[in-house]
Length: 282
Image 1 (cartoon, one colour):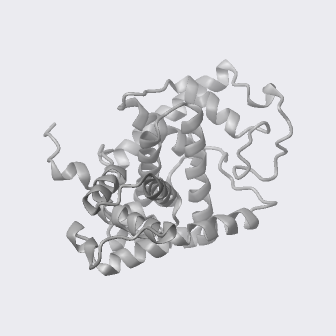
Image 2 (cartoon, rainbow, N blue to C red):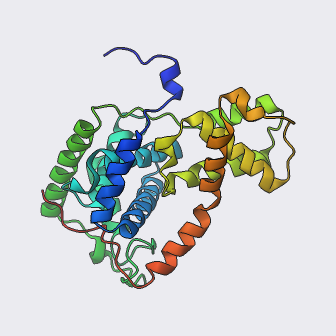
């Protein structure tokens, strides 16, 4: 396999306008409102599973972006439940990292997160989370074998859909480098920047598929500086990092509206079922 070029290590393949339109058309057929909700809570499920599996945040972020790319490639035509896609993406990314996880660990964690004992309330609002009975998330040997086979099939499906390209460049390191270049590398600003970049993984605008890491880093710095009251250099400093004003404005709005979107989702699905654990076709 040919080595990855130096610039490719800090860049990602982006979605074309046609791909975004096709995905939205597919969403409209299956209810656009529910599509955004399923992707939002699927990302939360992936995040929670990664934490329980003790996977670094960098790997979890890459898995969430991989899932979003798979949605773009397959839309609602995928033959797997959202929970299975989440598990397969996390397993695939972790496998090529320094922190691989076993299929049994992945299956056990997802069984717990989707059980009545789980504290992840957004997965299924209808279930009581006062039941800590271990039987609610016990995985029998037969169930494990079925889920493992399903996990492997979904993994191969994701790889095929993405052309075996699972490289993901994250903007976090770039953001810290840019802050040092701007002379504003404070811990308060850095923490807020990382929060915005991690939060953007859950954005319904799918900004990690529409903008390169340098634009995401610049927008996070700009917004974090405005929120924390830290003064940046005068002038159009973002142009130094190859970001134009239009992209910057769009990303600032996308970052800023995420909290309102999350609160709306919580209220909208208060007494409803997300459907993450629907049956797979395999």
